[in-house]
Amino acid sequence: MEKLSNPRKTIEIIQKYKFVFQKKFGQNFLIDAHVLDKIIAAAEITKEDFVLEVGPGIGTMTQYLAESAGKVVAVEIDKALLPILEETLEEYENADVIHADVLKLDIGKLVREQNGGRPIKVVANLPYYITTPIIMGLFESHVPIESITVMVQKEVALRMQAQPGTKDYGALSLAVQYYAEPYLAANVPPNCFMPRPNVGSAVIRLIRHEEPRVSVKDEALMFRIIRASFNQRRKTLQNGLNNSPEISTSKEQIAEAIAALGLPPGVRGEALTLEQFAALADKICG
Ligand code: SAM
Image 1 (cartoon, rainbow, N blue to C red):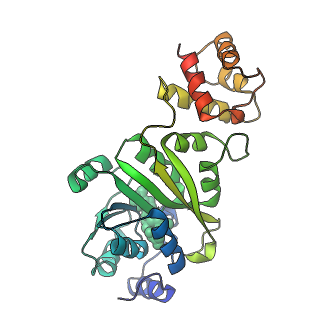
Image 2 (image 1 turned 60 degrees about the vertical axis):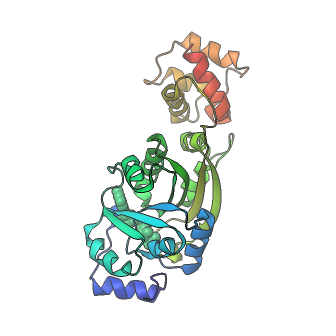
Image 3 (image 1 turned 180 degrees about the horizontal axis):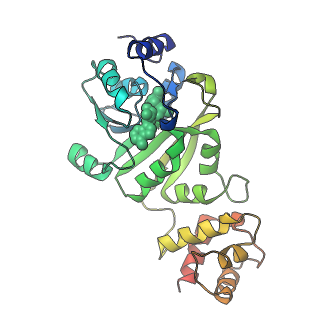
């Protein structure tokens, strides 16, 4: 069968099944072979790999993944795509489709049952409306994952890899970089998709650290501090923490902890590294 990366083939399949694109599911299908080659190369897929694909759509990327990987499991929420995937993936015996909402699926169980608990690679052209819950859910659930290579909104890719003191730096940069090392693999313009999204896209690769980048006594407290410091970007770190309903520490203790780290009282959250947020959390929790 001719590959779906050929736009003519995608149109033919969509017409044959009278498929109607669902905006609510973030459906923008890839129609560019060059971009698909780049994603597969960036993800460094080999025949040894077990790949989890989130949202196969009509199976465009799944076809490429199945050719390079040992096994592909693709999780799709839209029931209307299931008969299409049966046809487009017919020739690929190592590709399975699961009909589920990826946010509700027990991925840890899937990896235990189907890959003996060994680390998997996640590759996807993500539905943009749930990019953060998907990625953070995968990291926080401690599913064994080697890397995540995904198409996301360009602006989100920039935030994930942003460094302290830059305008894109924030809670997402710190959360992602706590678990993984991000690399921007490609910028992808809207005309590589059908229908065209109204934002630019980028492929980002997140290579999971063996251990989180910093060690901290109370991980949840550190993330509450991070959220509180970026909630009000223009405020100082001290005011951000004092005003947050998530932080119960007294004003005096907060001021002391900031001073103990050698930071000026007027410092803003955006200036702190992950290591400094961890040290601050350790000081605050005593
Ligand atoms: N992989 C295909 C491609 O590259 O052409 C489609 C990518 S499209 C951007 C996102 C896909 O994710 C759609 O097929 C959509 O139906 C699916 N999707 C959306 N929300 C989902 C969810 N919660 N769980 C699983 N799949 C979802």
